[in-house]
Length: 262
Image 1: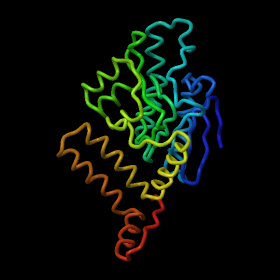
Image 2: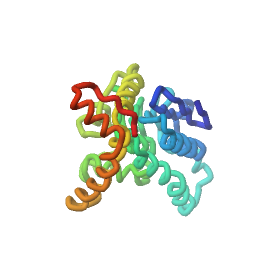
Image 3: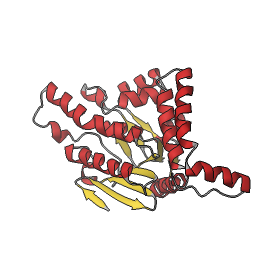
Image 4: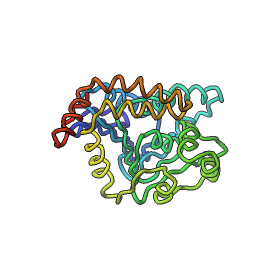
């Protein structure tokens, strides 16, 4: 177990559980917490024994967004710009590129930058009393932490624009309808259900799952011909893997495959 300021990192079998741990501040993101998250996700990325990741929040809410105490001294526009680029950009890119499934267990509300953090996860399980909130427009700001990119990608421009300028909470049921969460769980069962899903994915062929994540990201930014060629490049890596050989052998022998993640 690793615990830094605002973040807890634990192993549950082959699953790394990363917990935002500032419940007294609704897990608001300050510099130390962002750095802790970046360290925790880097550990999960580099640990061979980790084959899936769960991100959640301690207490009643997933993340209330940026800790406004950061801006108590009225920073200049240039300071705000530097802060967002220096701290949010590396974290969000890390979550999106780690080649292991990342499941967000969204307890309570994920607001502002917290919504961006939730949407950076590959998959989401949301508590039935949870939701997303983009309240930037309520205080005359625009979305940050990649929220505009994630919303537009997931639900299209028009709906993304509506939800980000209205400044109202999007309840869990509506999130499921829109495709902003994959599943909903009772609040008291949220983490066990997210862990069960992550454990199941951790038993899958990790290399193939990671490269599938890379292939989908590539496909969203390139044309069909380029995407097929890129898939072919990735297939060269999986065709020689132990898990591919095991998958074929298990299929021929009519048994459950025992994937090792390599």
